[in-house]
Amino acid sequence: MRNLTKNAILQAFQELLEEVPFDKITVSMLVKRCGIHHNTFYYHYQDIYQLLDEWMTQELARFSHERNTDSWEKNLKAFLQNCKKNQKIVKHIMNSLSREQLERFVFSSTNDIFDSYVRKEAQGRSVPEKEIEDIAAFCRYAIFGFFLKFCWNNMEEDIDEGIDRMSKVLHGFICQALHSSQGDPKGK
Image 1 (cartoon, rainbow, N blue to C red):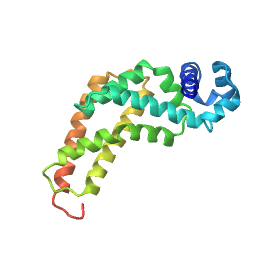
Image 2 (cartoon, rainbow, N blue to C red):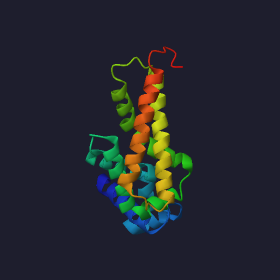
Image 3 (cartoon, rainbow, N blue to C red):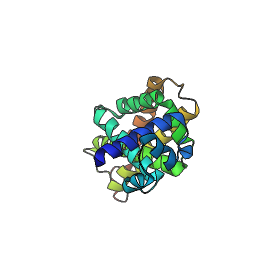
Image 4 (cartoon, rainbow, N blue to C red):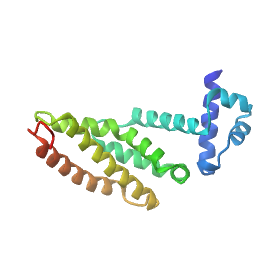
C-alpha cells in the first residue's frame, strides 16, 4: 500500500508539472489530486523539494536504464530528445529551480558518462587521478552550458547536429588535455 501511495503522489506530481511551474505546486494541490490527507504526504516526504528530488532521481534512473551505453553522444541525444518531448515539464522545473539545484541534477546525470569516457581515453597513459577528474568536470560544465543554451533557445536547435559539433570539440579537448597531463606527477 505504501508504494501505491508514493506512486500516486509521484504521478500526480508529474501531471501537475505538465500544467504549472514547479514553484506553483503546493502540497494541498497534490493531496487533492491524489485524494489523500496532508499527513499521508508528510509521511512519505519532508517537503515538496524532497518529492522533486525523488521524482528527478526516478526519472534519471528510468532514463539511465534505457540509455545506450555505447557513447555519451547517443546518450545525450536521447536525453535531449526526452527533454524536447517533455518540454513543458522541463521549462516548469527550470524556471522554478535555483541554478544550483539544476546543476546538481545535470552533473549527477552526466557524472558517470564523462568519468568513464575520460578514463577510457586515459588508459595506457600516466595521467594523475586529479587531472582525469578535472577533465571530466570540464566536460560536464560544457554539457551543462550546452543544455542551458538548448533550453533557452526553446529546444529548437537540431539535436544531432549540435551534439555532433560538441562531440568534436570535447573529443579534441580531452585528447589534448590528457596529452598535456601525461607524465607530470603533480598534474601541472
